[in-house]
Image 1 (tube, rainbow, N blue to C red):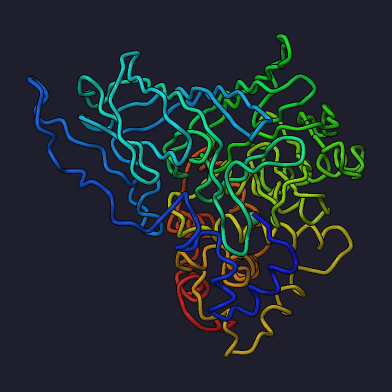
Image 2: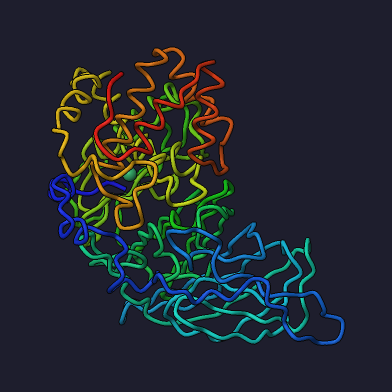
Length: 487
Ligand SMILES: [Zn+2]
């Protein structure tokens, strides 16, 4: 995610009140996520139908200390098939999401994250299942327990106008109406406004989107375009993402678009779309996206997905988001913004965090990619950027938040997470030298491609590749409050 310059300035000042205003997920006004202690104990044994002894409820949270209700326990999702019909009148949606998952315990019941809308029916393995709703928790009790290791399907049919999911100071997240349709921007917890899911980056899955819209509108989503068909007054667009994806990166953009489909000089398929009401040049957008994709592939390792791209849309928010394969840029995209969001394709989208606390692994790398791009394209050297940031005095509030554990309310705080994250990587580069640094980066993107990893994994990898003890460096830059020493 990248916030606009104005928000960056606010976050740089980092007074508590301003930080609170810039939060994506405050404790007020954010429907998707509340710090409520509502999780059902995972160990509660459910009283039993005959033969269901030892079957228990999956937990209502996946165990992320920053978002206790995010995700759910007891199963692992392999695939989401999202079929939605979008009706411009009132911005309503209706459809069915089919989830294919594997039980990781004997399940008497389990939860999905789903906020708003009206659930019409739930089926498990094709049979009607009972369900209850509380906040964002949709609790499903199948007729029979699901045995550990068993593959099962869940169909959730629903309809409604996805509710506003406001993030104070940042704008809306989730399903966001636009002038000619809608777009989804869901970091960290907005996807539950428009489809039921296990909403945590540690449970990645493949996706298929079948989206029906009024004839004349276009649908852009993650992955590869499979085709479209007209029926009466509607058109149905099909997209498929065969590479695993974290739920918050799911993209559906509906509107009137100018689209381009081509290849980068390096051979990566490149699909871009620009809102017809927007004046950005399709040729320029396509070209910069291609250049940055190929540049990243040379520096960070092969581009992790089957296609790259981007969407410039009239989304009324003040941030861009690295939705998988094709980031969304509200209103327009500078080269720096494209560098940041495409860098996330390696750092955040392919290699995903296992817990939100490690968000610096996404934002530090994406910010450092901006520094590297500038350094390699006639701009300022990364060392100059580093020096400028390091010049902040010892009592600068930004130093007080440790990069490796910023706390939920500082999850997207610009200086502690983005800038100091990039500075951490620059210090690593200076310590081990350029060759070793880029070997570490490429080992990171290949060892954990399409998976999840933690800060501890990164530290271990850096020490293994460099053959050096880097504890002191990482402790100072990631874990310590206050301005780190350069020695
Ligand atoms: Zn970002």
